[in-house]
Image 1 (cartoon, rainbow, N blue to C red):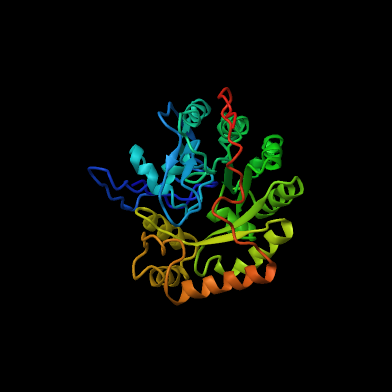
Image 2 (tube, rainbow, N blue to C red):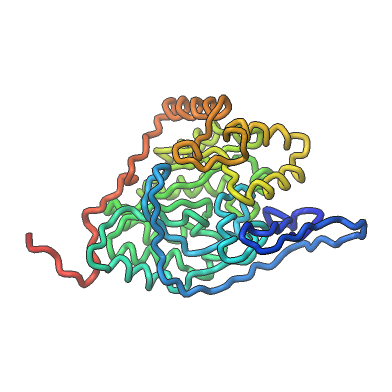
Length: 354
C-alpha cells in the first residue's frame, strides 16, 4: 500500500491497497518522518490488443445482457466506483492505480465489427460504458467510443450509453441518426448538485450543471435520455434524491433509476479511508447505515438485493424514489430501453427475400 497524507488534487483516493490476488501484502505505517505529498500523479496509458470486446452477463439486476468497455480503469476517479476491484485482474490496485494506470483497447472497432458479423449473431442492445465510463477524459485523444458508435450506426445495432461525462455531446452527429432509427438511448449518472461534494467524490467527472446540460441538449436533439441516481450514499448524498430527479426531469429525462451504494472487495477499504479524510464525524454513522442495508456486511452481492439493499433505510429510499417518480411522471424503463433490434443489418450481408 502507498501511504499518502491526503488525496492528490484531482484524484479520488490517496491510497493503493494490495489487490486481492496479490501473493504478498504490505502494510504501510507512519514512522514520524515528514512525507511530501505529490500534488498530482500523472496518468499512464497502456495499449491492449483485445481478443474480444463484447462482454456477456446473465444478471437479472441489469437491463442488458452484453456490454462494451473501451477502457479499463477510469480517470474520473469516483471513489465509490464498483468497477475499481476489477483492476486486480491486471495485477493493479483498485486504488489510485485505477485512476492513473489505464488500459485502452486500441482495436475496439475492428473487433466489434468482427463479432457483430459472426453468423448467427442475434442483436440485443449493447450497453456502452458500464465497467468504466466510455466518455472519460482519455476518450478525447483515443476516440475509441466514437469509433464504436460509427460501427454500430453502420450495422444499425441498438446501443445504450451510460456516462457522467459531457464529452458525449461531441458525438451528436452520430447520436442523432441513431436516435432517428430508435437505435440509441443515453443514461446520465447524476449523484449530486453540490459542486464541492462532486469535487471530492468524482474529481474528474463533469460538473452537475454540465450533466444537466447534457440531458437538455440530447433531449432537444431528439435523443432519448434517462437519469441514473447512482450511487445513493447514506448521509452523504441520499438527501438529494428528490432534487436530483426534479432537476433531471426539468432537463429532459423521461425515465429514472437509482442504486444504493455497493462496496465489493477492496472498495470497502478505499471508501472508509475517503470517509475518514472528508467526513470524519459522519463516517461511523455512514458505515452503520451501509451495513444495516447489507445484512450486517459492507456489501451484499446477491442478485435481487445488491442494487437496492434491504432493511429500513433501503426500504425508505425505495419508497422515496417511487413517490418522486410518480409525482414527476417518470416512465419505467423497459428491458430494451425502447430500442429497435429488428433493423440490424451487417454491411455486405445478403438480405432475406422473404
